[in-house]
Length: 353
Image (tube, rainbow, N blue to C red; front, top):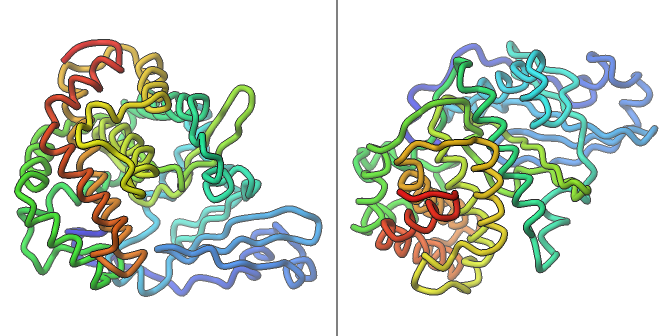
């Protein structure tokens, strides 16, 4: 989500073609690069999966002109991988980086096996399950602990929180799709959601590097045992409140159900086995949490659910789609019962508010 990001960054250069990246970086010979199978897996940035004849596979990510002109960049993501190059504890949370170029904004990663990605995992009705959820909780705890004393070059993008008070012309979502904009208008017009977004924005306590876009679609999953996860797509990362990552994880886990309208009107019951396993593992990894942490998690859960509704609307090109309506209903329920949700989160974290 790219609301209120300011003017486009300067210094953009035409990115090299994927085959050129493979050869210039020494990853492959000219003949191997020419024979590589390239598959476009782009989302907001230009991303290519390159499979070489010898079986090796890489992800090549670059900054296209349109994305640059929208005010977005790979600065935050490249910083995360640069940080990982001298911090082994952080490196354990990211895919292996084989090349990064800040000037041209080019990133090359070793590709994960496709069976460890969301599209293959989500078909399991028990997904994500306790083991993977706990692994994600441990990963987030490690990230937040490891980076508490490290300055970040950007602030995490939590722009959804500022939407209700932003001038209408600055409210943007990605490519400014009509459906995405309509969903934004619906969120801002909902008094309960808008009030919760405002309240959460006032509560945030930036304290470390956060991923900023935690969802299972951005996770590589090794079921183990022991289960282990790594996080990719660090475009929205930066200095922020760790509660945003935890609330985002809860929102994404629940939206797998809420997409189909399978949720009760009382969100205090929405912490199921996998969500509780995530929170328990996070608490174990972080130690003592500040008194207001559960309140911020609950508010971020609501905000991130609204954000996912906006993304869903843009993805299906229809703000009135039932899936969008289910997510907006979930966000509204979280907003209306935020105090009770915070109590439930606090108990799952092993304490009280």
